[in-house]
Length: 198
Ligand code: 5GP
Ligand code: MG
Ligand code: MG
Image (cartoon, rainbow, N blue to C red; front, side, top):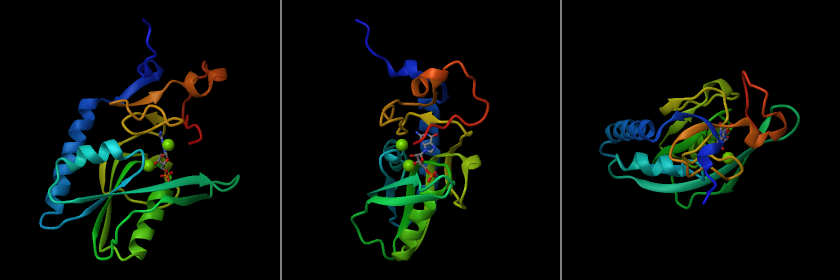
């Protein structure tokens, strides 16, 4: 029987399952060292950061885990974006050390929004650990303190990252074939930005 296979939709693999496991260990052990003697709250950003969160936190010591969901969208024809709080976290973070776990930081808008929200609620400290840092995409200032990989400006999926809610369960991060999101122009080769709306 010919089963549909998600792997066939991937142009090339950027970070393999083994690469990611190594990065999760490196970041998790660094966090364990940096937060020694403290009990941080790991704030995982739904849904993309879930796989990264569980893999990193296995290498850490005492820590709580909470979830938040934000969505960023373009509010007009300009690049001015808005960010919405979709699902709030369920605990008082006043005086707490927070580690935001992200799948990818692109424009930086979501991250900046969350950092301001947490600081306004009295967080003692806020740091960010992101699987991917797309530095060339930055529109607002937002620093990632712990980075899995610096990723080039291309649209990637897998290991939490989706296209239309699919591909999150691929064990690696890869570039989607153009024909998957733009069947009319599958033959055009992109040189710079192949980011579909997300
Ligand atoms: P920003 O940093 O622009 O506020 O938004 C980050 C969000 O945009 C991510 O959490 C993710 O949902 C989405 N995003 C940005 N770049 C990519 C990408 O290359 N692939 C996927 N699947 N999502 C992306
Ligand atoms: Mg995200
Ligand atoms: Mg998405």
